[in-house]
Amino acid sequence: MTRRAFTTDDGVRLVYEDSGPPEGTSVVLCHGLAAARQQFAADAEYFAAQGHRVLVPDVRGHGQSGRPPSYDMKLYTIGRMARDMFAMLDDAGVGPVHWVGNSLGGIIALEMVGREPERFRSLATFGTAYALDLPWPVAGSIPVLYRTLGARLMARITARMTTPDPDARKLVAGILHDFDPKVGRAVAENVRRYDLIQNAARFKGPVLLICGSLDRLVNRALPQTLRAMREHPDFEVVDLPDAGHGANLDRPDQVRRILTEFWTRIDGR
Image (cartoon, rainbow, N blue to C red; front, side, top):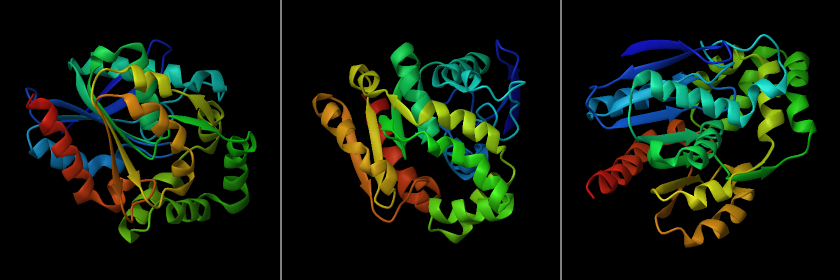
């Protein structure tokens, strides 16, 4: 595994990990809001061992990646983060990729397929609604809760809400403890309201939506997505019982099997 870094066109240093054989089919595993690449560390190791080249980024303001000089929400738009990820693909020198995005990582990919669909071999998401409309206090509450409860308690509570798995909760809590809540607010201001359904509907490649039964907030927003994607010729939904927002942490073996079968069908065409 190699840790790589590059600087974006607006001066932010971004970090990603690159593992697996260079000639392998390229896979990107992109984390959710307030998470980091550790969310996919075990999955990256698994898929690299299966012969894939695996890229796992820290999105700007997350993990070991840098952040802009201010918390202006304009520096954390979905479009800006999509440009970051295109730059990562260029830095790694990879062709069309199988993209797997959780929550924010899926939102970024939905923006990307609307801009440069040729960069994608396939798109898979979990914990991601293709459109969302949440009230404005959602974003502002992030730094308030961190300040009121303290980083440790806030991290533990959020981890408990994110996943039912005890080991996964420890991992999530550790990541959240070190997260900058002001970054969380800036990103959340941009992703609390968006509609990227048509980007997915127009994408001509295979699309997979993994739906965790315990991810109630996102699942409430999915009917609009499912109605719009009904006519897509290569759209698939897989229901995953007893999995929440971070399905790869709750049910890692099942998620890996689902993704492997999905990619095998595509690469075998």
